[in-house]
Structures are given as C-alpha cells and as structure tokens.
Length: 189
Image (cartoon, rainbow, N blue to C red):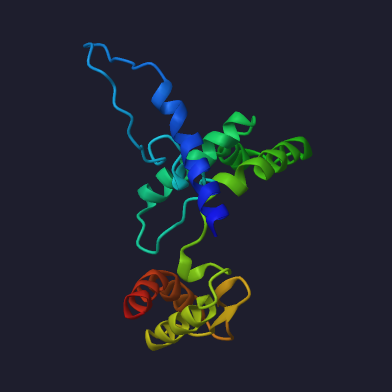
C-alpha cells in the first residue's frame, strides 16, 4: 500500500516538476502568463465537424422552390463531374440521350448521389420501420377522399387505372390529394 502511494507521489512530482522549472513567459503587455487547464473542446474538432456530413432530407411540407434549393449541392456536384442535369433535361426533350451521355451521367451519379442527393422525407424513407404504416394510413385517407384503386406498393403509393372511365378522374384526384393526406397523417403521428 505504501509502495502504491509512493509511486503515485512520484508520478505527480514528475508531472509537476517540469512546469515549476520552466522560465516564466509573458504576453504582449509584459504580464506573466499563468498556466491554466483548457478545455479540449476549443482545440479538438467538434463531433459535428468530424462526423461525415449527412445528406439533406426532403420534408413533406417543402415547396418546389425549397426542393430546388435542396438539390443545388447535388446539381453542382454533377456539373463538376461534367454532367449538367438541367441542360440534359432540356436536351432530352429535343432528342433521346445517347449511350455516351448516359454513361457520363451514371459515373457522375455514382459520385454525387451518396453525398448530395436528398433523402426522401423520413415518413417515406425505406429505412424508417414505420414508413409502411404511414403509407397505409395515407391510402386510407385517399380512399376516404374518393380515390379508387389506390394501394401501397414496394415503391410507395400506387394509383392504378380500373375498368371505367371515371378512373382518370380518380387518378387526378389522388395525385392532387396525396400531399394533403400525407401532411394530415404526419400531423396525427
């Protein structure tokens, strides 16, 4: 027990002695500097800075303008990789894309998507274990609104054409009502 105490004392003494023997340093005004314990938070990178930046995430209540702003880092990355998404969209309207352009888009996408392409809203994200329940509740809401032939599929919510001509009206109604039903269901959760 005495040996442990002696070792502890020696360790403390060896740690403290170099500080006692060092010459006193002064700051710019000539005042001596006092040794202080500093938090490592000031010198170490913060956890948020060292953590890999997360991809942006859509929200159910986003406006089209907000979504375009959210896409800008992705679009910028694609341009840096030699593929301008907006220019290619315009050109695709005039002529079909060739295989070289498709290959260029694929390479750029492999680099940019994992970093910058926005994730779906959490309510619709396949990584969310409650996403299917959310989709089922949205389908119930749509059916209450008069939308026919609506179901949950692997890709989300599907509205299909049925046998009669009123189905196109049902599809149009469903497309109009999906955002409202999603917000309604999300608000209840």
